[in-house]
Length: 239
Image 1 (cartoon, rainbow, N blue to C red):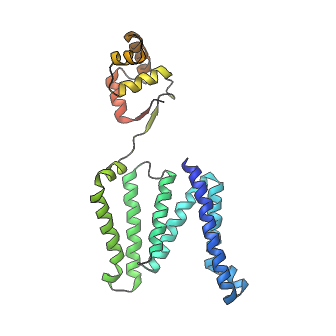
Image 2: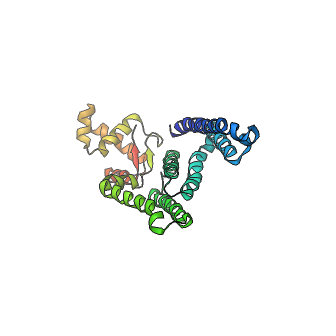
Image 3: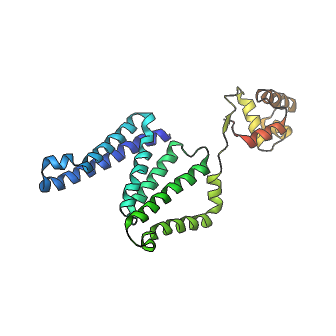
């Protein structure tokens, strides 16, 4: 699903950058002539980016080009002007696309810290190279940090859940469990006893017990205590 969406965004961003190229081309051709309008570095860069997005949409392994393009170009805009909102916008789009590629699925917190450090490093370089007074040039960086702290205190509980490393999935079907075994495991994980499961499924308690015993054996555990430990370590898919 994520890769399908990245295919669509690849074509969408390609259309945006191609549109930017055409607008600049029409605007510049009267001032500088056809040759200059098609060969100046800025125009060629837009065409190269357009081609990169098209390739990312057509070739699955190249989908990573989408966040890379935005993260590479965000420093250019920020360093040119620390007050330029385009650079920050490019950075945010790049981070969202990285998340879509699954980059943050593992080791989430260190990668998020690295991403934020990258943005702050760009801002610092922009401040140093701006030639303005440190107070004036660092104002955008201060605002970004203050806004981040504000979000942390406002949505701390939700952010802790987001930053928490997701548990790996364990598919019961891939472990060879039958439909009944998967259903009984799911019921056991929800806290139901063998007697309650037998009542719900209108089966004898011995049938439930034997079915669960076979399921435990396939999962290489002894009993429901082992199943609880397994549930702590993995996100169990009983479908």
